Each structure stands twice: as C-alpha cells, then as structure tokens.
Length: 546
Image (cartoon, rainbow, N blue to C red):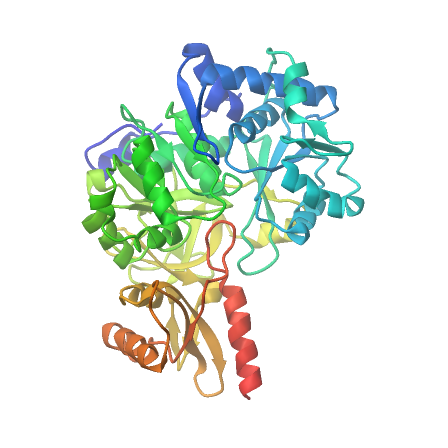
C-alpha cells in the first residue's frame, strides 16, 4: 500500500512492493476483511427503482463460498474461462469472488455487446461457462450453436431451457469454501482491449494485477482510504476502468462501493446519485465528465460530498480540468494506463502533483518513460511512445492465444503502449494521441487531443472528436465531428465560427478544415471514442468526393 506523504519525492522514496507468494484477489478484497470485521459495510446497491440494499464483507464472503461450491459441483475447475455478462450488481461481485476462489479465469463482458461481439470474445477465450441475466441469455441462445466450448449457462433471472438459476446455486451451496491456493502470477482475469484500432485482444492478468493497481488508485484518490470514504463509478465493471480503477481496489482498502446500473449515462441522475449517497470518491472517465459539464449550475443544485475524483481512459483536457475546479471545487486527478498495464501514471493534487493537460507522473513502483522506436528514452519535449518497464506487478501476462502480438508489444523490456506522449521538464507526461490517431497534415504531425480540447471550449460544443481525412495535397486534413449543446442549431455560420475559434486559439495548421455535426459519437462500452470508425467515415467521404 501507498503511505501518505507530503511530497512526491517522499512518496517514491518510501514505497516498496510487498506481494506474498500466496495471493488471491477474492481473499484480498473480501475474505480477509470478513475475518477481521464481518459486519463491515462493503456494498450499497441501488436497483432500477432506487431501492437500496446493503451488503457486508461477511455476507459477500458466505455467498461467494456458496457459489464457488455450487460451480465446482457443476464441473468448473481451475483455469476454466468463465464469462460474466452482468451490470453493476451484488450478483456480479459475488460471481467475481467465487470464480477467483475457484482459480478460474474471469472474462468480464459488457451488457451492451451485441451477438457478434459476444461470439468473438467467447470463441476466442474458449469460455466454458457464462453467468448473465435474461437479456444476456437471449443473446447467447442466438449464438450457442457456434460456441461448442460453452457448456454451462447460469442466469440471475428466470429464463427458459437448460439454464441454471443463480439463486438456486446459492441456495444449494455450502457457506465454507477453501480458496484454491494461487500465486501472484496465476491467471485471474482476461479483459479484452477496447478495439478502438483493430480486433480486440484478450489481455490475461494474474492475481497480482490487484496489488499492482493499489498505489496508483491510492495516489489518484489522495491517499485512499480516509475516514468516511465511499466510492462510486459510472464505468461498467466489465471494463478495467470500472473493475480495477474502482470496485476491487476500493474493497481491498476497506472502502464501501455504491453500485447502480445506468442503462445510459445521464449526467443529471449521476449528480443526484452523488448527492443522495454522499459519495466521497469517484472514478469518472473524461467523456462522462464532459457530459457532467453540460449540467448548468451543478454546484448550486446538488449538495455534493466529494473528496476526490480520478479520471482516466482518454485525455481529460484543460477545459474539463478547469471546469471541475471552478464548478465542483475539486481538482480532477488524471491518471493513465491501458488494459495491459494500468494506473502507472497519476496525479495527486494533495501533494501538488497536478498540471492541466498532463496525465501525471510515474506512480511509485512503476518505471514509465517516453521512448523512441528503438526503446531509447526521449529528451524532455520530444515526442515518443509512452512505455512501461518490465517486470511490473500490474502488467499483463500475455495476450490470449497471440504470442506474436505479445512479443510485438515490447521493445527490449519496454512495453509499448501505442500512445504518443512527451515528458516535460518537471517530470509530467503529456498525452499526444494514439500512434495511429496522429494526423499528418502538410508535414505537421498533429495529436487530436489538443484540437478536441479547444473545440470543447466553444460554448456550442458538447462533445467532439478530431481525425485525419485523406487529402491529395496535404496528405490529411483535420476533420472534426461535433455534438452540439442542447438547443443549438447547426449551420454554416456556426461551422465557420467554430473553425475560427480553433484557428485563433491553436494555429493555422491545426484547425478543422471540415466539421460534421452529429447527434452522437461512436464509442466503445468504456466511453472511448472509436476514431477508427470516424476515420473510415472520413475516408469514404473523400473517395466519394473524388
């Protein structure tokens, strides 16, 4: 764990990894607390009607033991891949805990996935079982014939056919279960990459991934845990952001978590939940923060108790950073990582580690640098790839079934993120953009983040994404896809106004020569803009125009 310190240098100096030879996620996040303090609050769940139920560590330990026993009796064994297709709920957490105790490999899948996305991941992982709800069962029935490995289906709701009842399994299981002895490197979960630039890959993680996250999450939340802390995130627990930036670290640190399923993120309802539950700590991805920013007079309308906000997944940007300070009275602590190696850079305003436009400094225990294509460190101010040095407890074990892709992820001992960045003279890392998101125009290499941040500073813009559109003269031009604020009408005059806004605030080579007004941006289930689809759209447009 990270110990509180008064400055960044002290934080680095006093930290040492201490991961025991026997390490199991379920024991760390639940059973150890259940032994020490079984009545300690672990989870507050709000159902769709707002009805609240509370769950202690002792209750979760007993329920997960029951489920582990029941699943073992149905043939689930160590190393089996088991898909979880469930929203934020107590059943989801109980299933995670039971499967870690069994030594199985959890494959979290988002409820929003369609049948093609599910089939790809289930087929690729070779999942032998799936735990889901009625909606998930309906999707799985459509593709079941194409999934010969999938032999066991469990539903948390009543469903037809040969589907096992989650509640019946709990009722038939025993309260006592001895977790399979696992070590830090034993596989625990497989999280599929977002697929923003190509087919998703299964990033396999060991149980140590939890320990590897703790210092980064503690840093971004200003030395979590503090008395009275209570955590919430709108991020789906099927994503590394919801699962490993929020749920599991919070519980491991003894901080209770609020769970609630949002069918679609609603900024007004999110503010109401924060206020009603007196949430103290929140992980809110940048896109969701930008949507919260559209709520007028939020600080006056909602009585918030927030102590810390962490944000990661995309670049936050200066505009949203400044808005949070002015409207929420909080500095958002931006941090950085990816599915393969997360929470390795972080900010912590409590000790003065915070800079608008930067994604933080290296978290204690992680060696992070900006490197060139050959793995040599870049000088401050020089663009390169953000990279993490192995071995590292938070780093993935490998890509499932893709040895060549795993090998290609490294140059020497540096794991390349595919994200372009630069280091400033004070040790902060600044995100420039994905390697394949970089726009090349008239000899300039342009990162989309700065353009998008500038677009958001225009009062008519709610959301924005910038991509490169093929151009016979300039190689590419900047094309912006813009979602307008409610009540704003698109038109040529507004388009020119927005274009001039960027031209005057940034530079003549960075402004969007084309602007498309859209109702929504294509996003992954994790809230990242899928620029690949926007690039495809821009490319198709270019071909048609020629």
